[in-house]
Image (cartoon, rainbow, N blue to C red; front, side):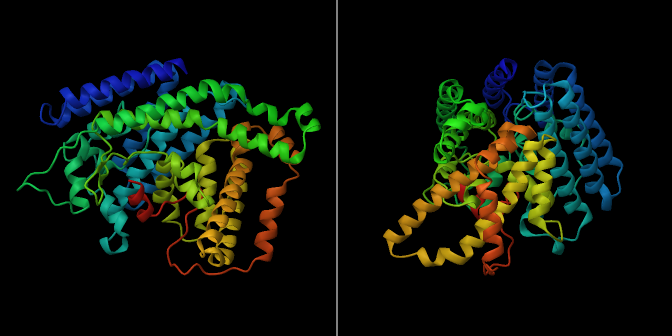
Amino acid sequence: MVNFVACQLLALLAAFWFRLYLSPSRASPGVRHAFAIISGIYFAVFCFGWYSIHIFTLVMLSYGIMKMASVPNIHRYSFVVAMGYLTLCHASRIYIFNYGILTTDFSGPLMIITQKITTLAFQLHDGIGRKAEDLSSEQSQLAVKIRPSLLEYLSYQLNFMSILVGPCSNYKDYIAFIEGKHVQMKLLEVNWKPNWHDKLPEPSPMGAVLHKLCIVLVSLLLFLTFTKNFPVAYVVDNRFIDKTSFLSRLGYLYVVMQASKPKYYFAWTLADVINNAAGYGFSGVDEKGCFHWNLLSNINIWNIETATSLKTYLENWNIQTTAWLKCVCYDRVPWHPTVLTFILSAVWHGVYPGYYFTFITGMFMTLAARAIRRNFRHFFTSPKTLKMSYDVATWLVTQMSVCYTVAPFVLLAFEPTIKLYRSLYFYMHFLCFFVLLVLPKKSNGHSRRQTPVQGTQNSDTNKKQK
């Protein structure tokens, strides 16, 4: 972990230097690609030693597939190889590290690499293997129509800005950033009209960087104090279970789950800062003329902590993984998209039993929450006092539901997960099954699919967040 933090801080310094001295006006795309690759490889080797060979092996295997596979199968072969290799590494992790302890290891970067490999493979298939009329507007916009060169491919996969934590980004966005077209491309996407003739602005990321650095420091402080004082293992301690009431156990579970968040806030926000400091992550301009740097943001903390629905909560947590699952699974499978997306998300995370408890429980939670919202929400839209009461109630239920669902994700092992759920009488499971059996199924009035946990994020919501 010390190596990880040291590399991320060094990457932050490198990002500032990269933006100032290797800007597109000073250096060619080839030089920028080369620096990003060499620095990324160094950070990977420094953090993970010889285990980093797994990262490089998968990248080169996937590049071979991308170059040699037939157009109709390029996305299938890439997906099977990347997910298969990742799963084998997840399984070996149980033997390399202590089972049940989530250690900072090479599987983390490998998970991000898998996202990038499959994202590019599907977008390349969209660009050269499908008809334009068969693509959605988003797929058409992100489609890649030329197979990348080795230099471009390695830079996209191994660049120092995202090698350790990510996030996964679209290939076209990354190449536009390297070539110095990133900001202009995003401004043109929102039909921004400059105030000067034939001149586009060059917004500075420093405001966003300083703001996010403050979040990083607060998250680190909370991790070193709040997180350390509320260990998750205490929720399955025999004395705690025997001496506390059901409501007390629920309350403590909420506190423990809140205490587990700062490390994610810290890591994901710092990764976002690194990309922004390098000049990457510009997302456009709002109606007030304010520039935003949230293209690669993985979390929206305010929306998470104030979420009044499971859908809102999950759309603002691990946003780029949500976008990836939408790209490679939810928008493409012909049947049971919600179920298959949950399964893919669980497999991608690893082989620990806690992951499967979380995602199976989350699948039923999502379906039950959707059913309740469709059947009851329209009764509470007015007056304002009634709607406010409804919002407070749904906020409380959402927060407790998330705590109940993600607890196995933190506990990881089978025995403590069952012990925790038994101490809580499996109450959320029974409530979900009851809701799904009793409430009638109603159409939501929209033809578009609804968002599952880390499964989709509709483009309208995504644009508002950015």
